[in-house]
Amino acid sequence: MKVNEIFFSIQGEGVHIGLPTVFLRLFACDLRCRWCDTMYAVEGTDFRDMEVGEVLSRVLKYRCRRVCITGGEPLIQRKEVEEITEFLLKRDFVVVLETSGNKKPPGIFSHPNSVVSMDCKCPGSGMDSRMDFSLYDALGEKDQLKFVIADDKDYEYARDIIAEHSIRASVIFQPVYGIKADWIAERILRDGMENVRVLPQLHKMFWGEKRGV
Ligand code: SF4
Image (spheres, protein in one colour):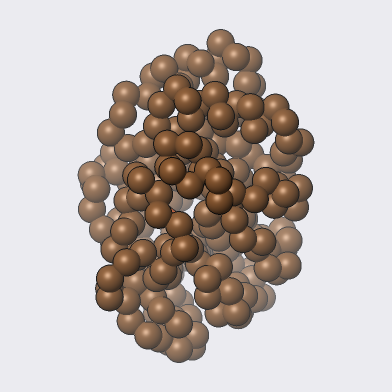
């Protein structure tokens, strides 16, 4: 399988924000978001071909039972993601899958110790036409749906999607890194969206736009 990087840090996004996590970043993505902050895992040659067993032994070296499989788009390597997830869940790990919102996660991600962290790409990403809204029905309370917000148009798009769909997952509005974000919090309050969390990317607040954190 094509692996971009494996590292240990704190979770910078979503409902596990702040918790120590092992990150397994897989290479390749079929989308091209305008604000993508991991292009090194999307294009080029920055990956190593590794066997699943080698990946697992690297992951297990960290004394942490929370693993985030991210990318790129991990579900391009679906079979390997399933194999790794099954192995870890059997050993009582928590597994978070970060996915871009146009691929159905494997059935193993209905496991209570797993979290699907699905993106809904707003117009500012340039990828909104590639989203599959039917995937939201399968997200449970343990999962999360994340909107990255670049501007007013994105905010309104996200608000309308939430109104149009019955979403059981936690909903997160995440400002694009570097923009002023107080207006997003104020709009959420003004619009009475009492179940939406607005969260920054904590790792970037700590370390800036660096790799491996
Ligand atoms: S889906 Fe994620 S990895 Fe792929 S281009 Fe968009 S932000 Fe980058």
